[in-house]
Length: 277
Image (tube, rainbow, N blue to C red; front, top):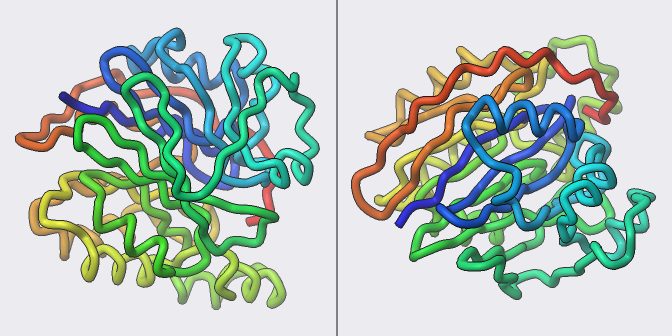
């Protein structure tokens, strides 16, 4: 048994994560266009007909942009809280809307998806644990702090997409106005590299094999910097930086020996999109 995971895009220009087994898959967030989602999945050898549902973390544009087109084209249920749907002003057919409740698992074929609350400046934000055959993959991005929900669920993960949004010195010395800097680092915004590293060092389980550093700021972080920071403490965990410009490889997550599945490198162009951060 295995879960196959990939970041299709990760950053303020759009977020979309693929998690699936041999038969079915889910997307967490749909923040790049339907066309770009299809293109990147094809480049990775992933099939859209295996995707059975989309789970939405919160209503910011970089997480919801493609929902109406993608869901209606492929007849996908969108699992989203009522307040997120309303606040995001998402125009979606009612038959495709499925609500969820924190810590109540939703079964998609053999896959189980469990949402849990997080701190972020959105109306009703959630992160997710996706499970299959005793394997757990976490999607923990857009989190303002490493709260008890984050810690409890990170400890379960064989692999995780974990936010490392900004380097504290780069943010402090950067061009952003003070109010935006304070919003990002104020406990309802994003995790810094050091905050994410503390979660990783303190709470990672012994069986974790892959960590995909996600939602890096274009202006306030460096992929090389954060990769070096985490690799110094990896202790056998493979550290991957999820790009804001292209898809990652597909990774096979199992309970035993883990292998990385080669895939053609995406040459997709950046997706232009406005975002809070």
